[in-house]
Image (cartoon, rainbow, N blue to C red; front, side, top):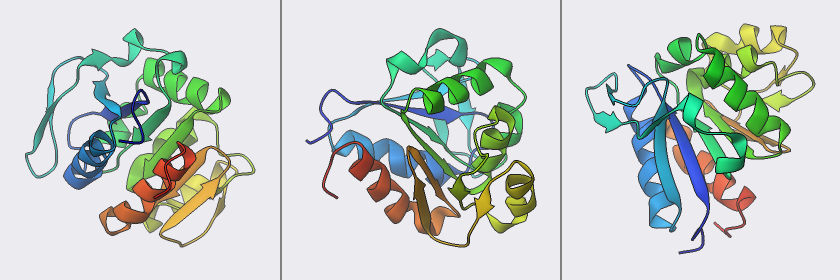
Length: 174
């Protein structure tokens, strides 16, 4: 239980990529972290494959000071998350505060909207490569890319490397 006392927030919205929420949720809990799903609204959301998760709080109810790591899953959820000003403000504040910010798959869209990509090395699902490079990032095709406090991955297949990188940034030897 190496993450005891660490607070990990996973952003959720409708049609999230089920594995990209559930795998980190339980992996970080397994290490002793306090893991919370947070959404635009405090309600139950369902993933693309129907898995439900309850958002305990709204993004307006937390600040970057309330977390050690912020995980943004992919699926179609990022397209909805990026439309919410409070969510974008939270992502930007967490990034600027040096908190670990992890984004996988289409979650790069949220990073684009938060304007945190300029000069950063990243990866994502290949379909949003142009969006990320247009936001000022240097995109590469790799299972995980770590650039400072920003950790990015491409697809559910990359979840082991993605979670390992987040764990290492939080001080766990993974």
